[in-house]
Length: 319
Image (cartoon, rainbow, N blue to C red; front, side, top):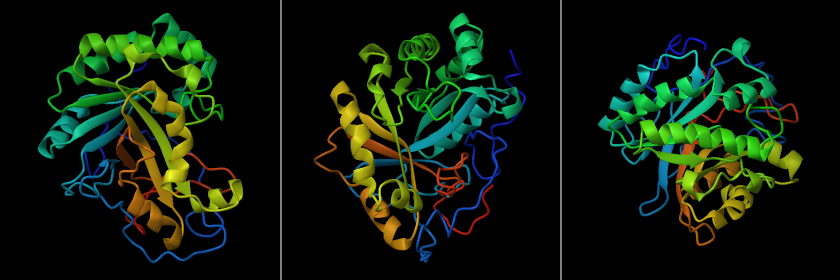
């Protein structure tokens, strides 16, 4: 087992957890993934949180939402190797001080990309129980937390693009692995909620692990103007981007979150996203919360669009 306490989870701005790594940075055509327009005068593009609307949370390694009072959830990303788990205690204190939940995404790989296994190697080791101790150690710390905790393990499992080592497994293999990890969580942290979190693709249904293993369903929804224009022929708004995944998971009868979302493009593109993300809509009755991904993407997007910067404060240095 790799050293699970090697690297700290702290950032300089806020006690959030972030997956680090070495990814090539390619430059998009135009600014922010725009295909034809560079009109960006909005400097703070944070979503409007509407009274009586959908709850709002954020993964916020830069601390841009640290003093915002209407943030319900602090999102964290935690690889289960090569990290300093003592920082979880500081994250708990940070969330508790602000009366926030913790959404902890546990990613079953190392922080250090040079240590990461192939998809097949990871699957074999998880099934064999080689990582049970890693999960048990994390879950035991979660069980001691004072903040309400939601655990999201192995997200976007139906994505076959190669982005994640655990994604694209045969559905039954993923279900077996997910249940194994959630059984450990239930023993060590019985009060934690369990989030099953597909990307929202048409092939997600066979990966559903069963009602007894899911408290919440989380989806990923991102809007990048340049991508929309190339992939769909026109810009899309938040409801349009959410609809496919929502329609696929609504039938499971669980509360639905957008566990990761962000947007970037021209002012005219992002304004509807800013206004609509936390509005209650009749077509999404099970949607209860959206969690903004307030950082640069760690992966390059198709069409040579580079790594979009979802951060709400534009013009800030983001690696």
